[in-house]
Image 1: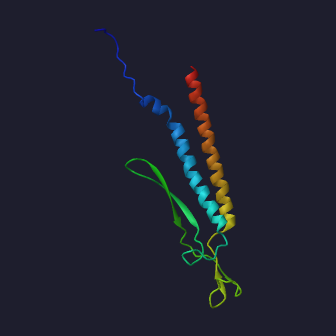
Image 2: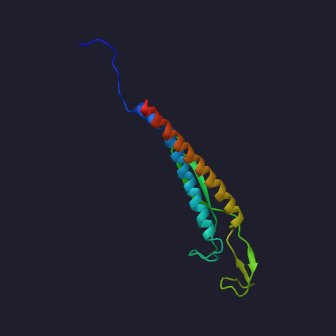
Image 3: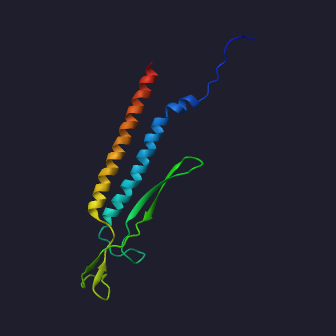
Length: 141
């Protein structure tokens, strides 16, 4: 029986090197969900009647982390704020007084949110590319 050090080769150290890639990918995934909600909000900014009967309600995305597993999840919730009422008695969705209930979507706010989400997504993509380049260089050693 040979004497000497024994080494246990397990995949765990390699997984640790992939941590920055996982983190950046999770960030990009979350920002993608924000971008989808913003696009839906902008597309429905003038929708006065949905299948539920009322005007479109702005979607807000919430991000939650499971305290036990640490997994990140996103979900869309409707914005509770009321939309605007505009007097337009000729509109097919006008009420008895001639007012139309419009969605609670402000396109200017959505565009600012879009710019922020896009920048954060780009930052996560840059981190991903930098981590990938560092891992590639480490493999060349």
